[in-house]
Length: 151
Image (tube, rainbow, N blue to C red):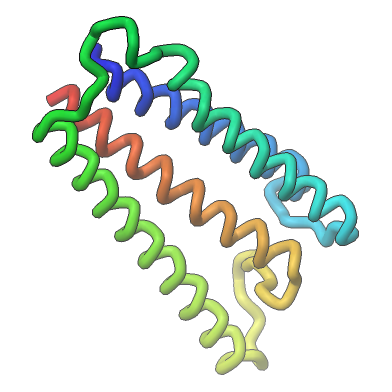
């Protein structure tokens, strides 16, 4: 397994664990709860710090100086580009779903949905959904990278 593939596995696992922490702090029964600003900000700062530590860990775990050739070759760059492309697709898709949801809920305010939908007027819900979109995009990128290395 190459260094880049190990880093992708690490990034995938750490992103899922950090998102689980975010979900634990901001939801109750898979419904986003309205958090006081102080708790929401501390949760956000904790998620940012955990993400920085998780992104830095591969450099410590698999240093480039051990002679296994951590330099990226053309194949690694192509795989990274494919991951970046899919990351962008996921961000575009999620943002468009949120925009359509916001427009539809405004246009059809007189109708009651048959399923529980997120309230985009709530700052906690909006923050959770936007951060989750970033995590989903990052997970998609790492999954594409792993898939390309494994095929």
